[in-house]
Length: 274
Image (cartoon, rainbow, N blue to C red; front, side, top):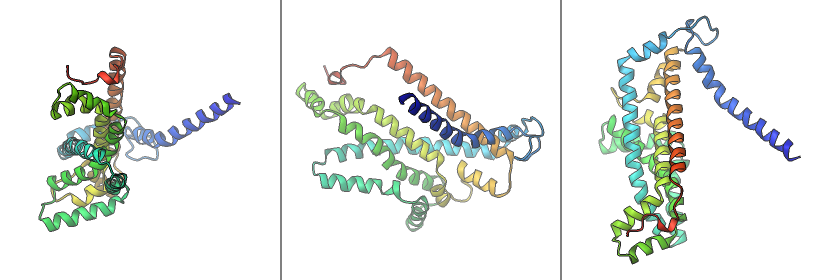
């Protein structure tokens, strides 16, 4: 009975992955089609990949997207650490739940409403639409995501760690940098990468707050797709997907290697000044 249940579970998992990845592989397959369409494969070509690398404007947009994603994720993660520490120190359950609810507003709100709200805010405040407006909006919607990744690690941390550090003469800065931050480091990295993913993927909010002469990859792909099917979009999407797979593979190898070389130390000894 158990084996039968496992077989059905494995089959269901395979079907889920097929549904998720089949469109991506379909897109990748036709990025090599010399026929210029996604209906009939006529021959192998790298023409559309050459178009991507020869398109200076597109390369600049890719760089803009990476700069916005990395910068907004880093700033949002720092703010999220501060916010998570503040929420964790609130003793009143009602106040803490209120803060968490306010933190989650940007996550559950529709992207169109968030984008329109940012557009109105920047217009009233006189902020010129472009790099600054996109960066500020990406920071704003990335902070709640990072907080949700960091806060559980703070909640799981034993209060005795900080108390022991203070008893040993550690200052508040030492407690933060040598005890708390090392313990919640996995949450910080998770928050950063989640914020990075959301920033790279975002279209709706970015569409509202980009100005003339400045664009990100998601907005550019949307604009090109409206003009008609172009297999250069397939080629660009394939390169981005392969780059993402490479990053995930490198991250997995590094974390696995680190876990094998550095067995976990007792939690009570982590970061306590000596």
